[in-house]
Length: 155
Image 1 (cartoon, one colour):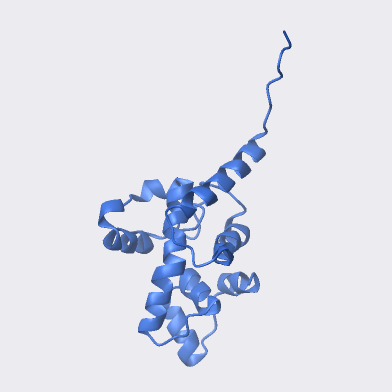
Image 2 (cartoon, rainbow, N blue to C red):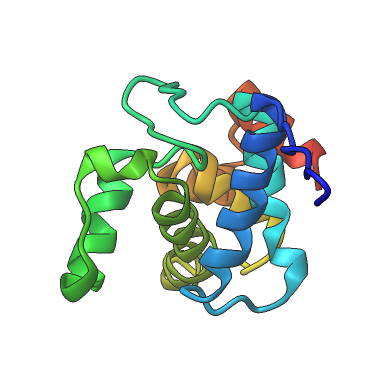
């Protein structure tokens, strides 16, 4: 009888597999407009974090998609049967689900409410800097924060 070798997987490969799994798992929770919309996930990960699951920057942003408490609060108000706690934002598929919802559904909703074009450019500004900065930039041409400029270069 032949012995089989155990497959050894490094921690980096395990993390990469976890991220890939989380991306496809979250697809079942979110109604993606197109696979190109997943760009925001790649941009957020690449520009602000470098794939660290427990990253907490800026201040109170949590997890892979850097979800802030106000975004979690909006998610919970819009999804009372699927609400989450701040601690759950470190669970990859929950974080991605909320982040993609915010980018794909909530940001466009807010942009339309303020008569701002629903483009990737303004969705990224809304996602990263907030709706108030998106309004100021659209109406007054106000300068964006450096990190937002960095995100926009990714598109």
